[in-house]
Image 1 (cartoon, rainbow, N blue to C red):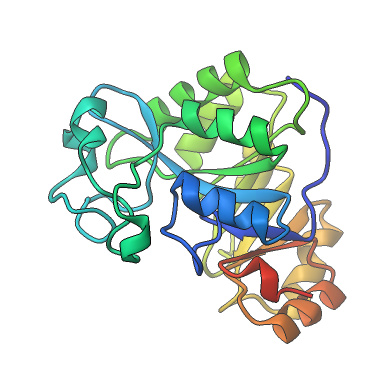
Image 2: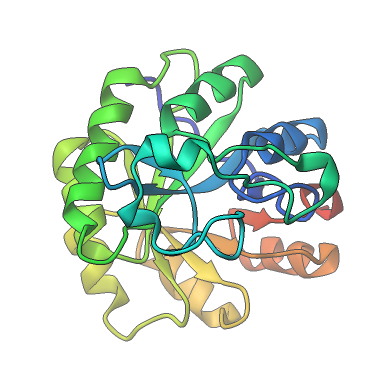
Length: 243
């Protein structure tokens, strides 16, 4: 695994989800064109245990398919259109594999925040499969990725299989037991929902020795305020709007 480097202040959310269909290579390229040097994307496993970039449990919102992603093999997903829902210029955009994303990031020289978004009942399996791929294939000339999840079981399985990669515990509202969970996981950061994060909580998290990153921040003045609070990075659909 490559050397550790801190993520930059601005990270593109699902690529640049305000400008291109989320979790596609077109969205990653668009983030790069807009000046982002890191992107955040979601990863799940297909029925045949292949890691692909996808957020929802079902195909309906962001593809021309229907039903559970977990019930589809990679080959079945290759026929799905993951771009036309966003705009006709993206018609034919596919659901990318994690392997394909790594190739694209290598070409673009971009860093990665990878969110483990396991299908129901597959948390540990997802963590192990993704860890295996990153340990084997992550290029030495890119900064080490940050791996985040709302699911402690997925993070624990990933961390056991890839102990050198930074983990981030994702939260909506900061739970009362956040410190115990983050400490048990060996996480280095908390990724917090901008809708619920309070200034005093940022201070508490930093005071406990963790970094704070915040999602999904699409307003420039709000991002500037978060940076003043001590938030290290904001994850944005519109990286071009950030200060």
